[in-house]
Amino acid sequence: MVISNQKIKISSLNTHGIKGNLVYVEKLCIESDIVFISEHWLNNSEQNIVEAISLDKKIFFHSAMDDAHKSGRPFGGFCWVNNTDIELVSYDFISSNISLIKIEINKKVLTIIGVYCIYNNNTSEHLQIYDNQLAIISSLCEQLDEENNDYVL
Image (tube, rainbow, N blue to C red; front, side, top):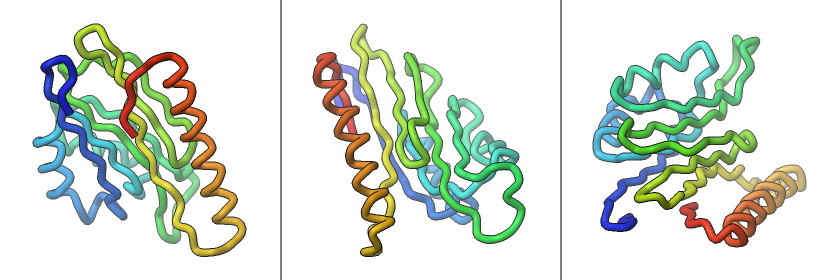
């Protein structure tokens, strides 16, 4: 993506568990200015795993698990890994599947929306969750359009 003659490399990856994909995630973080990682499957006490990937990056971490989660399959979670020279305006973890960051480039704000949509397994419960996710995304996009803000989904 090129914004006002400044090239920004943005990547997104569903890791299905970051521990098994650390080498690929490290390479992606080296080659990209901003990386959205979903499904890292880490709890709050394991944030250091993401921080160790790239010591010269800003990390914005969210776990979908509470600290009481001790057994069973881990799930969810996402984070942003950003170059330190990118001017961050704000970030927000909107839901367990949607997050955004706002960065400033040449005095213009760009919003980057990271999304991990639930898998639709043809159950009414998953369909309702999916519909809610789409409604949130649609509402965000409408709000950004009304504010005349640039965004990437």
